[in-house]
Picture 1 (tube, each protein chain N blue to C red):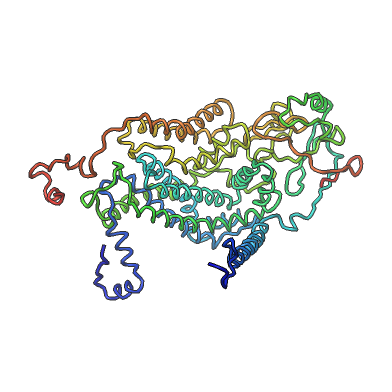
Picture 2 (picture 1 turned 135 degrees about the horizontal axis):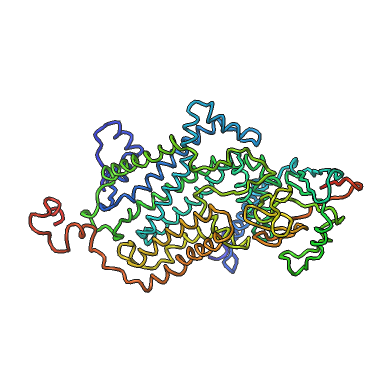
Length: 420
Length: 181
């Protein structure tokens, strides 16, 4: 990995003093990437793109927004009606939050399916879970800022989760609020933190990428790349593949931004906050619904809160719950099925979270909650012992280019020549 | 390493070790004291804490009616209970309550029930103040967020809320006026 020679003398002059070009060449062009990545590997870079979009649109919105209980709601409406292109930037930011979660959830389930959390990528995975938690905190506080009914009551319910902590719970809640109820001090600090956290996320994303580049991407086969014939440079091959995915993603994203900007929102949030009236049916944004369902499935306040946080925390220890040495679900006949059951279970939890807590919904919510935890604490550890994985290919190239024996004459062309 | 310039004692502990621990300890205390300023900074400010009281005129409230007043930015339920409601609250056996409390301990005059109207589960405002509201299975209040039922003494009977609706500090100024706070 010798330092590359740059033709441009200015680039060479700069690079000698600050080797940014060497760094980029090393991390983008030389960086060997498994050659068999499918489109599920697009979602990491898409999420990174979305983070930048959210920061840029957020900075623009902050120029017009007023963080005060008497003016916040009106200032957001003003952005949408009077500020030049305010409607566009606000719709991008508002829908961007939802799509950021869609991308990240797909990214996480891709990691679950292909075993991307297994050695040596445990820290990479844990940093990803940290990013998810930071995203949740940021999204929650951002949703409070327009100061509609859902903003206010969402803030009330979520901050009250901390009152479940024994002894100090009430003090913590009053500390979070800066008062005796969700009020102006709460709005102000949420605004401050909502501006801060995205930059913390950027920092953790940098660590996430450093950890990624240490051992490289996992791949659909879940086996390590063995030498040159198994990998291709990230640039231009995957930059172009990511660009294509970005185009497809933006097409869908723009459909929402331009034609259905409020589809993912809730009409109650266009009613200004009223601290004396709780809307009859309050629900969080869709991306919190599965966790909300787990909270409500348990009839005890403290245990409900613990279970909700545990539903995310379990991801931290996932690399040690799933001891199977095989990464990819392609070679794990049973895991492959329970993976889809988990996906289905999360969708059921999401649906239950959107429904009132009564009748059959409660029972289904409880069963789905039990299954969610059983997946991680019972099924995965058992599968690690009892599942018989199918034989793994010898290399990434083998399934395409044939077995370990030399490829048939005249079949492989130059590619086969290089292999030899 | 006999006694040298750093003054090592027989047990191998030097003056330098002592200075390092002492200085490090003071540094930690200072850091913690400074951190507290930043943590306490987020607690309710003096103007928020300033003891606020709310005076309520009870004259216009008929038996069976309830009004909501604001005290410390929180809704307070003032309900004039009917004879039947009082009897129901008093006759409820304490061992059937998740948070056992006698009705007599929750009121100063049996007719007047005064409660902080914030669900003890996650802080929603329970329904039951208006005639048209759903009052839950025990004729008191019903929280629409997560389905907690309160009885005619504001005690939790069913649902995820862990505690009874709290009774705020209040006093009767005369027969028809109370001061909350």
